Length: 610
Ligand code: G6P
Image (tube, rainbow, N blue to C red; front, side, top):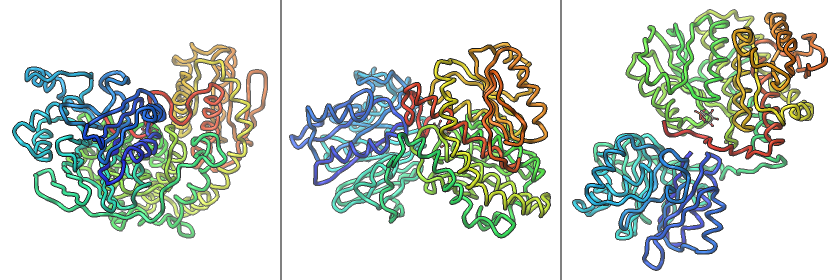
């Protein structure tokens, strides 16, 4: 989703800004722009719909050279993705870039029009530029004017501003949308994600909610939400810039699919003893808190929500704990009745998803026992604001369609289930020991599933000319089917729906004909025979079946039935394993359809607006 980069230096900043935008590209966007206070003493900008490469091309023709600048990748919310709506937005000698959404923009727009301001875009951001311009009439200092401006904004924002009349600084404000300052020598930077700045510095200072910052070449000043000057801790990363390199793979998504055995291994490391899960993997006070838990409420979005749906089956079956799962955008606006001693669990790859963060903040007012985040980013807002944390070790995920983040989340959730069962005495020691052993073997099993890559690639051909697909699963495989259908629609743009197989005859069967492939995951469990009957219902209507089945399930190829045998695995872990062929299937269908696999249209990696 939208990205911000800013720089104040002694050298030309345009290349730094463009490189920063490129590093944020994976988050998803549909236009890009840059504003520079040029060496000729003028504030100038270049904006382009489409990719950063198009902006870069335009800048080759008309270079902007200067020592102060801000840049942005925009994911359209208010107004179409065109040049006019791309950031930076200007008002007088000000340039503004903005992540987030200003909810009272319409009221402010009318007020500002009344004051004579002329709007050139449909965005909520332009309102900020004009309002700040107006405030500068009373407060000549840019930071003071910004403080007065944000007081009138409702909604979420990460803001960066430069002014041609105060060209020694970038000023910034954070509320609901992350911002980090990159510290250099005689130069300083700003971005919505530190990854954007790793080419210029390894020292960072994270702004907190409500902070305003004044960033100059030799100094950084920060004020908190109450206007008091504050120091924010500077952190240094020694791990070197994380290279965004596809290696031997054609797309990041395929690389990330193939990384799953190693990242699952990393997520397990240091968290298992001989035959138990180490409960303190969730934090030093986890054992004491877990002993009190009587219910679990899981909240997440997208793929992370599907991980939560799988966990519900595990928590109820293995730990005997009632569990509810809800998408964050619904939970946050619902009147929720909280059962006593309920653990509030959020799941998020990025830890910055606006709805999940808002749900966590609401939950704090609702009397939950404690909050726990399963997250892939240690420095994220979600991790910082939760009582307990389990970090997945998926590494940076670039493909917008989440793959390795999902399977590592599932591992984290199984560790949580076993920990709760262990501490509360609801899980037999023998069962825990068996599952710990199975978890140790999981990376090898995942490797075996990945070896089916070329088989799945062939099956993908069945989908190339199709417009609709059904995914079926039963039990904990139902959320796996949901995740499979989400992957397919995200990257191949084929309409896909998931159903619990038992629901087929209550509606979706009406859609089945020979143009509607039906994908099914069929591990060898007690629901297998029931699933087989559901599949007969599809075949009888001429539907093409694609079945990923346990090698011992006794399913055979036949006319219109394509069976792909899966390595045998303990039933509890089967959702993790069966996710792999569905990821590969979506990937190869998307490649056949020629879509932008890593950056599918209209989608963003991290959704930092509501
Ligand atoms: C976006 C991404 C999805 C992701 C979802 C939740 O929609 O495109 O891949 O599952 O956000 O993101 P989170 O970072 O909270 O897991």
